[in-house]
Image 1 (cartoon, helix red, strand yellow):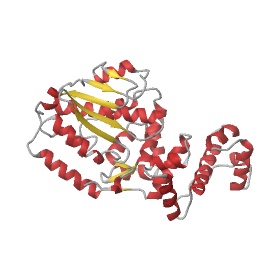
Image 2 (cartoon, one colour):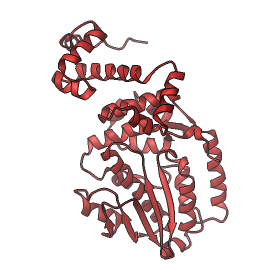
Image 3 (cartoon, rainbow, N blue to C red):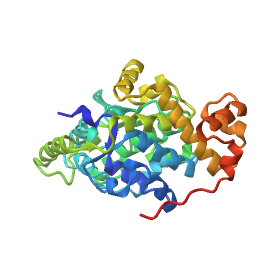
Image 4 (tube, rainbow, N blue to C red):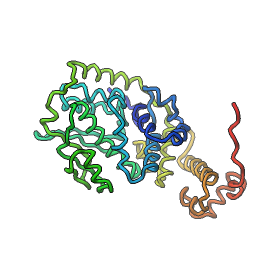
Length: 346
């Protein structure tokens, strides 16, 4: 039985694979995030917050804009990359049994509160439907295509042959690389602007015996998966999760109580109550992150004050100047002129 403790988190395996797809300099930058540190990502029982994973996706998209970054990440991700979950897909007697079990144990890999999977059968097709959270549109598209590609690459690895899906439906418009995506999926039977994301396999494919199946191994792995879930713990506490979600909302210019509450899979009223229980408030937290974001933009960019004001939610440069003076006791230009303080030794 899965614990609600892991809601809002993902496995270290998933996070590690995505971080590993980035250049070294960007990896170092992300390592400053508390639950993206190397010692966290190498601990297979660590659960990384979903807001931190979203930061990884956002950085991947910035590095490779307008690409099929989701499916392309999987080109260099052999079986075992995603740990136990990968073996759940490949050890059943048939693809039908393996994929059904892997869907039921999605929490071993992803966030059970954000990622929704449904298995459907109509006598001709075996379909896995997928939906993710309400993130930024580019992140949602990357995650959706990643999820569909994940099931296809794992199905091919399990079957030991080039399985072609009987149908793919995608809720997004055709990307610029629609032809490349058709090549990756091995079919042009892709419906865009669909009501849901899905990948379908023929009944013949999912009922064929898997060449590497070992009788009883799927049950052993499923039992082990439940033990892993019971032993796994989030690296961050609730307030850290909230602040990560708020920081991501700032980056996407989507700061609102409703939006952040949705990211944390709770109602706005519940979010306000939890903040009060932690001795803070929505207004205080927004002001704190706005302060941090503003200082970072002033010190690390040459953006005009009007642009910074717009990014952090102030009406104009004058309002930004007043806020900076209140925080720092000096004007924005003086903040920019001040030398950055070097980290102290030890």
